Length: 261
Ligand SMILES: [Zn+2]
Ligand SMILES: [Zn+2]
Image (cartoon, rainbow, N blue to C red):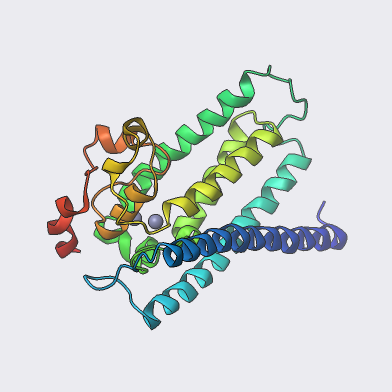
């Protein structure tokens, strides 16, 4: 039964969770933005300007816009998170508390399984969001900063934020997960998203260790996606991009696609 005190504790949980998600964003994105600035200064690496890239004040405005979108996305994640916390309390999810409840081997296996599922859902919905009928209200804002910055990592239009939050909720409802596994997934998701948005277009894939460029999405892959939205739709793994031939090895290969956007 819903009582005034349960409403109050629900709102309190929502405010606390929202604060944690926003704080996590500022700490992780701010840390990487700071490192990036120090690196560019120490090596005198020039910022990418011209050829469709933001410069000067528009870059600062872009960071402000990305932070605004991210703070909005955090509200959606917090709302879904609070509903999920209620579901956990009522035993309606598959979360388990005993560390060895499914055997030690299940911890890394369930972690890998969630990342694989998330990568697959992200790839296909990301391609969908780039369709003209979806792009305008589901994904355009994420692509406005050119090149992206760590602040872009959580900058989603509401439909994309809802999809990502609901995906995590469905996973927790459907797959047995220990809180440590779920925490590891959330940390991976956060750090990987920020690394993917370092905006290092000038970092060539050919400079990566071959196995790394072949298997995992990194800042070069995702920077190419932001410059050339017809390629590199994956989140963690290059698997779907390789299978469905939506990857390129260098930015010049997509110059015709860039002109078309
Ligand atoms: Zn992006
Ligand atoms: Zn995109």
